[in-house]
Image (cartoon, rainbow, N blue to C red; front, top):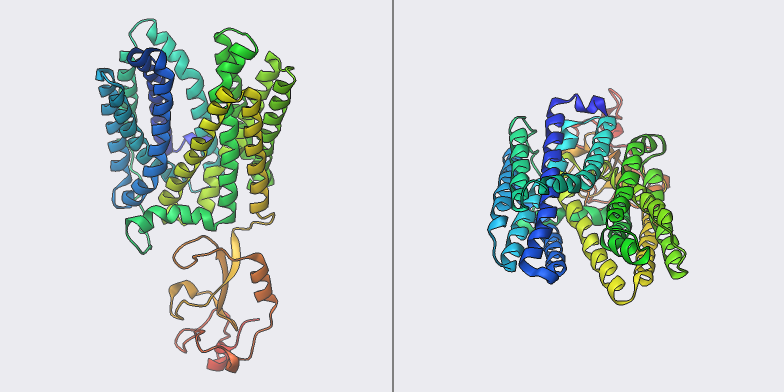
Length: 492
């Protein structure tokens, strides 16, 4: 980890992320107290609605902002988002009606929907080495978990000295410090994007990328499994600790701390596991760990045999399973998108991941309140198990980055075909394969194998719509002095 932090640009960006997370944690505590002041006993409903608004803002706005962000320098976009969040945080103490809270929360999360995917897309360009980037992802995961553990403690200490309204000032300071750190570094210029269509086509490209790439479809399924486990922890920990185990309020923090500790331990171990076993072998077990722990929780609740230490162990394992799924996600996205398309890919990941949480949050809360905790745990178990199984089916066992494929519609003088060979059905070559304008769909393994096994036809039987190399454009496999007829001969 230390070697990654020696990179000055990344070190300052990581510090900016940490300060912004601390500010967000203080805002979470202050918002809860503000909701109680405004709504009293209905504060839970206010917070639940605010959380739903947060998810809707993420899901609806992240792809659109990602499409528009291609025209804006990254440093300016990140600084503007941080300054906007600081201004909104300073406005929150002055609200007097619940609807004003909802409006400001929507604006705050809209700014976060601009900041987070752009930040995520910038890091792989600053750390191009695979080993460094994987460790940066682990550090980012640690930062999220430390924020969830330390921010409530910091807020509790501050509340002993000041009123909760001043916590919003701390939030604003965190965002302004983040903006200052971003301003102090030079960030890579966004690469030009070769993509047809207007804003709608650009906004939906990331979703189409997920839909067309097998490993990204599997990642989305694993995100759903992680959301099922995380929702059980976030929504129902207080009820399990207080009502089912009859323990004090301080033990709620301990249970949440067990989840964070499990996540941090796994986040530290994930980089080595990915380097040794690969993405698929390191991530898929995390989904099944989540399903197995939720199943054990369901059985324990059904037979009333759950204990305090069992809950701590279960929460630690849920944290570990979540980190196994989420920590390498950025590496998988970088592997599956062209450099110019990384902002769109991360914006889609941001929106689709929060769509999973938008589904599992109410499932965990409403079922626990109406049908009982056992039913809620059983439903989330079914979601996690189905998602993990689907991910295993969608993600091919053999998943190389370099794929052999055919082009049948590109013109012969397209620069992309510089290393391609003329075959009976088109131009064939192999390279790191991602979905883009020249590769709109994923090649199926059976079709690729069939094309490679099929013997080439004579040149005279080649279909007229298949381009033939021009005499002035020699192919890489042609021998010097072999002549025009040799250059037309299909490569075996």
